[in-house]
Amino acid sequence: MLVVLAILLFMTVPAGCVRTIPAQTDSLATEITPAETTKALVVDRGPSGTLRLWWDSAVPQNPLLASSASARAAYSLVFGQLFRLDANWQPQPELVQDFGYSEARLQLTVSLRQDITFHDSSPVTASDVLTTLNEIQRLGSFSPYAEALSSYSSGRLIDARTLVLQLSRPDPAFLYALTFPILKASEVALPDGSLWQGTRTYQMSNQTAEGLVLNLAATNPAGEPSSGEQRLEQILIKTYASAIQAMRGLEDDELDLAYLPTEALYQYQMRSSLRLDRFASRSYTYFSFGQAISDPLEQVRYKYFLRALRWTKTGLAWPGQVSDIPVPAFHACFDGQPLDLEQVWPDVLAQNGLAVTHPPVAPDPLEQQPDSLLVQTSEELRIILPERQTMLLDMAQQAADWLAEAGQTVVVVPLPEAEFAAQLVSGDYALAFQTDEIPASAEPSWYLARSVPVEQTADEGLPEDGANRYDESLSALETGWPFFKYLGYSQPADEAAADASSRLYRQVLSDLAITVPSGGILLGEAAITYGDRVIGQCQPTLAEPYLGIEELWIWSGS
Image (cartoon, rainbow, N blue to C red; front, side, top):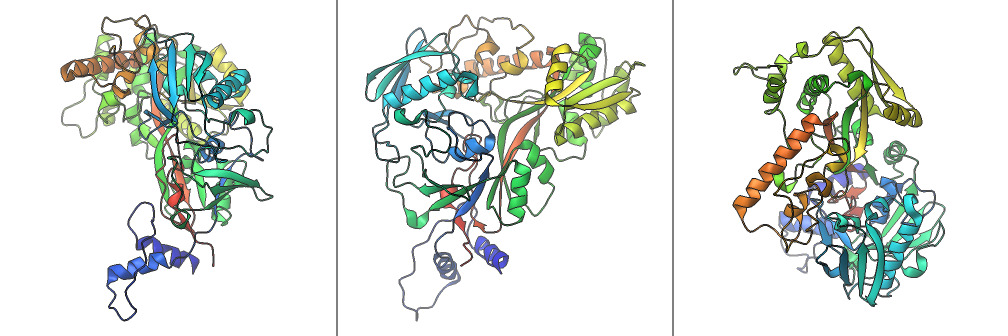
């Protein structure tokens, strides 16, 4: 009966979050149209029950220390940030009213909004921001936010709403680093199990034997009263050690919402019964070369053999988009299309004396996979990967099968995390399959420039009036050029110049993708999945997987 009613309710409203429709005031004798019947059904659904979602924390921990995806997703319901990332990973002011850099790009002056308060009605002040920043700096590597803030050196207060942040070097990604939770100055060092004050839609209310209770805050992030009649009023966050265990809880009707990172999504996405909302994650999967494949020309052969496009033909449903470069498809320079090396490879191979031609009538270039380009050896090649990674194991095994078809003997070796890291350093392998996290700014230097020096070009630099202009002494990829130029707050006025720079940027990325000693495979996705009691949908994004959660309605069983 519960499932039938849930399906009926879901089918009678449009896609997206469900909003309460005002009740009809006509008398009972008035003829009711089908549309009015739908409205009446939505009105009569009654108050929402408590939504149950999961995290992997036993008790609330200091939000500045929460590093797991599930905990950070839950805390995104409670704690505001100076800047928040939108669906395209662009930083947008949240608690900030105005900001500006000094001419040398070593100082950022930030003015806070005056209409934002903590849940206890106290105002958010510059002192709260500075104290939070200093606490992250003190925590160092224990805080997941510290590394992105490495260019921050100190800060000083101007007044209650204004502060100046001092940088040790120009940092075009600094706005992306200012996406940490803002805590009250008096609460930054509270112990685990405490209830911190936040500024977003939900407030930490109580810690019970079942889990952490969040209640709808009296005011929303815009400083306006919340409408409890139309919004989900209570959330219970329950503890499960992993996404897999959380999914079991969902199946047993112990949870209503589960956040699936890329690895977990890969294991569950084949189930047609799941209702999934997918979104781009920071997960990027690739392979790197060890000492057994150290010759640059040999690496080119293998990178072409295992190039990203080939993975689309495996028959496996990878949770994401195959990509040679760890930059999302919505990257402004790509016009919604990820960088694709497929058309570049024939010229690259020809330049290295490895002529490859695909007959123009061929229905699929991959059917002419040039296995003969690989130089088979009698030595057994080792493919290593971290153990207990289902997706990586399947990828490594697929690569091994392709190599075996080409006549090369291969062994796949899953390793404990510590041993895998040690072998990455020693280089005692042929291929290593691994997953890394794309920086919040989505600029690719972490992947492309770590072992390949980048030549400086005369066209480097951002517009003088751009919010993210940087010191021109830095190289293109070291600064993420020109990613910030196109996704910053100042768009170039000259479209022709912008197009030329975009083409140059794509060329730089293509050249480096071919020469760097690794090969890209997949830009990952994550997802939100719903239980039978949930009516409506979230609008999940990388930064806020539960965006729109307050509009959900939960069948309470009454």
